[in-house]
Length: 343
Ligand code: 1CP
Image 1 (cartoon, rainbow, N blue to C red):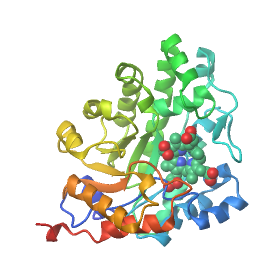
Image 2 (image 1 turned 90 degrees about the vertical axis):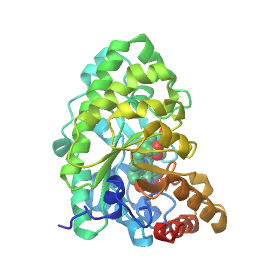
Image 3 (image 1 turned 60 degrees about the horizontal axis):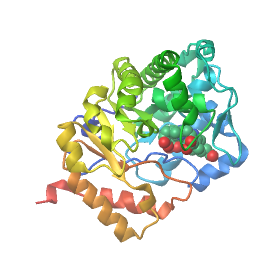
Image 4 (image 1 turned 180 degrees about the vertical axis):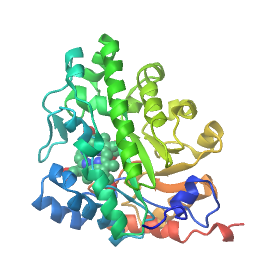
């Protein structure tokens, strides 16, 4: 099996010199790709995730079309919840739905333990298949406990996370027990993906920005720390969205690197976080812009991030409206960068 240790992404995560940053994009597999839409017509979402052949194929699709430096395994953050007893559905035209939301201490107790290789072998199997089929490094991932709790308690997506916050404040002990259970499940899931050959793993805390500083510290941070304390053998990245006001908490999180959304200013991030690898952070909504604008924005980000410890990415995922030409223009702009020629 090939060795990923000299890949650009592994070097950037070790802060070694590179002539240009490595590039991949969150949601680089998905609805903006015609070849994904073709498979989407034939198979349901959960089937695409639970069948390792399909998951591997979808992971490889963007790597065939674009010169990305890494793939991210096709799966979803909500799958472990399905294995733990949540009645998870992806119905056409709707986001994820959980038909038996967690609303009481008894509901928390009823969630079953999660053993990744027993209950959810497909992402690990898909990582192993991808590693046989491409030399590109493959990233694993999972959802952070707070973000998973949001879907589990709410029963789906939400603008306000009303039920989640109500549960958190009215039943804090049950909420913390839930966070702990989720942290154990997620820690095991990330470790299993590393054991299967993931070059690094990313924890997605998409909804952390819904919390105040106090609530993040009390309810979300301890569970994230627990996740990262359970994981070893490959670098870890923490992505959260809309959390500029928590940047100063990041050093306590326990991740090796941080994925920034597009609102975060590089100078401030580097001042607050110091010498840690950073990933990001082009606004995904810039991808429909003219190629020259994309190029300027990409080069501005690379220049600000500096020559070591930067992985180029979007500040959040590709959307279904993302044009193929915009993805290509952003990658071209990264590939033409050469730090050895920058004075
Ligand atoms: O075809 C479809 O309609 C499915 C759309 C889709 C896709 C492509 C969903 C449903 N999940 C995924 C795959 C996925 N999800 C990946 C694989 C990598 C890739 O595509 O390149 C990853 C990393 C995720 C992670 C994920 N799922 C997050 C965290 C990251 C983020 O985007 O913020 C979240 C919040 C989810 C939940 C989820 N799954 C799917 C949707 C539409 C959503 C979000 C719903 C919402 O906004 O509440």
